[in-house]
Image 1: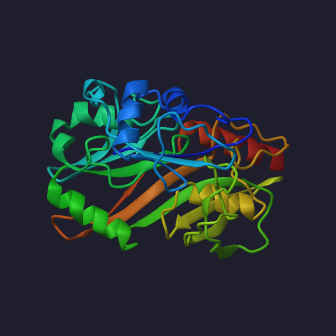
Image 2: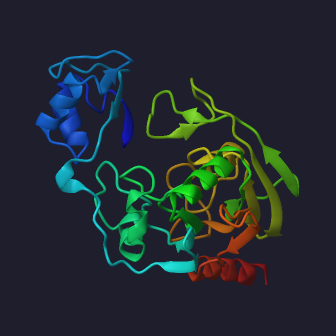
Length: 307
């Protein structure tokens, strides 16, 4: 069931009717469907139910939970995906940058889930309908290795491992500047920004613990290549932590725009390794995904600058 929280600001939604505003914001739902959700108490303003005609005010927090309409149930799409490993219980794939993991507000197709349903039809009954088989996610801009559950036993087992922080995740990221220490950890709590609800920040009224470990792999003229290990799995955690530390990920247009010589066509963040216990065999397994060529090209240019 998709969830969405929207903060009303001077530039977005003020004085609009609740039903009209949401029907414009959430393309999956019509105005009549929005009205029905309001009547069913599935939409709340600052924790309280309101009428569809309610006029939005600055600072209102609109929270909505909804099912995808029946005519928009997720359809399999014949989209090629890079399958690193598969058996009857799990599939391990390389997610490319630019691909959304599952459908949601404003995104109906061409997602990883659409592709997975074509290649692995058996996942359709595993987990929530809008994200079958999905036990963890990567940002749209982030590339790298992901594991998908193909059986209910695997789904529950992998969910437990992620929740208990038993899955070891490693990323490669190129950040602006040079780190003061070769190794370290960042432990700032993160949560929704108090004014910009679509962003995550260390400045939040509802902090959630977050921990990111890093180690320097190589230093360049104006950047540093890091190995990053998120111990927790908060939304945008690595990106927010590095930006807050003064070393945003190169190519991050949301959290860390910087002026410099480096030109990156996308976010330089790649999930390179995933280690977990196979939910059926109980053996420790590890899968890796090499750095994509577009990111390798950026590193080659940094080496040339060093001479």
